[in-house]
Image (cartoon, rainbow, N blue to C red; front, top):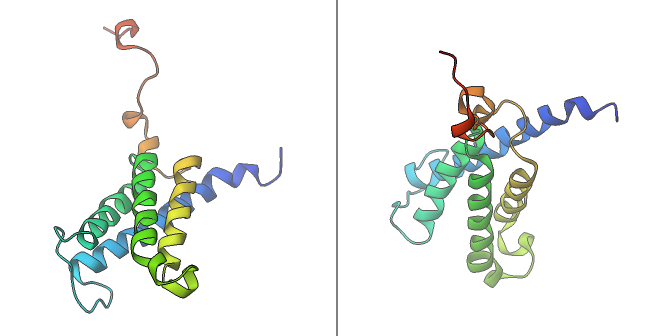
Length: 142
């Protein structure tokens, strides 16, 4: 075993918290005008409002570690959509078209979807874990 292996799940958990928090902040900025936003976008506005809602909800779920993989896949897909529909027509490379954040979130969230939530996730709490044993064969103490 590599000497850094024991820290792996902790680092993954911290990474998930940071990227989830940053994704949430983008949604808060767009919907509520926080963090120096010059304006807000209605949640019902296509595509910006829907993207912000995905950022807010999925970012929060990722940050706290609930339904992490599903939220990360949805968030990653929304950032890929944003990149290809909004940024790519402005230029080929993210540095040219303003798509750095969309690109980083897309790939960062895809990584979370594949490696899982790591440590510090609410979904890791025993009360929230699904039993792999079928319900009909479970024995309850009487």
